[in-house]
Image: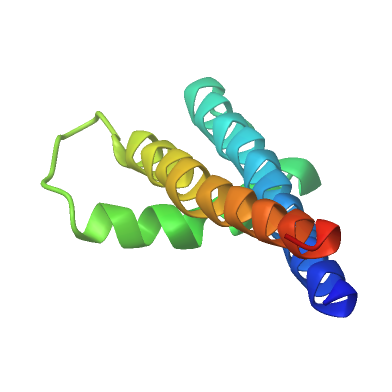
Length: 108
């Protein structure tokens, strides 16, 4: 049972890491929004990286959204999707795996 408990705890840590990576992605997404406001040089390596990381997701979201003219709401949809994913999926799975792992470790 201890082996299964440690496997569950390791899976919980992997879920925690994935949630942390999504948090970093939210900051990159925020940087993308700011860069679009200031009209930065697209040949700048940092700006180029930000666009390469965020554009595939935002492009997919824009494809399913109605045209709002100059106002791009796709980052808001991406933020909402990330928050839902983190709270509903990752936090729930993390809490379940931690409680199951600790229960197995204690031996109840």
